[in-house]
Length: 140
Image (cartoon, rainbow, N blue to C red):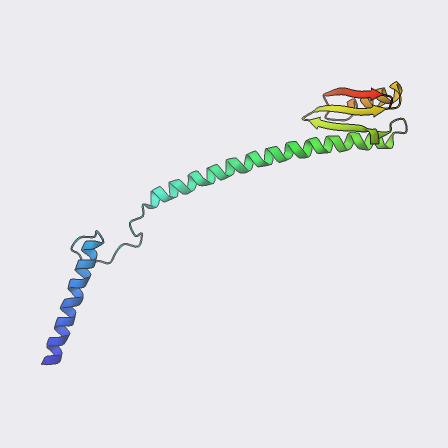
């Protein structure tokens, strides 16, 4: 008889403990366990995740566009430098080529007016170049 009474007291204490826990957790006086979401609004989390994904996609797009621009400029500069290196009339080591979009700037020194004209001509003939700014000096 004592064993049964002890079991009943333990069972009663457990039921009261569950009720108190649920009440303090905000679930009221119920014997149901807390929900699996733990009070998190799944739709709000989904919306925040979608917004974060859109922000990341926009940032990635910006990085890709800037990278393409830089690679395009470097590619155009390399094409022009290669043309000058292969041309016997131009000493390309003394000519600095910079590219901004499709505008090419040539700076440095050349030996003659003919070399300057040939360097400008090679730059203008390169595909993708819309304008050439000539800042080369003849002599020294």
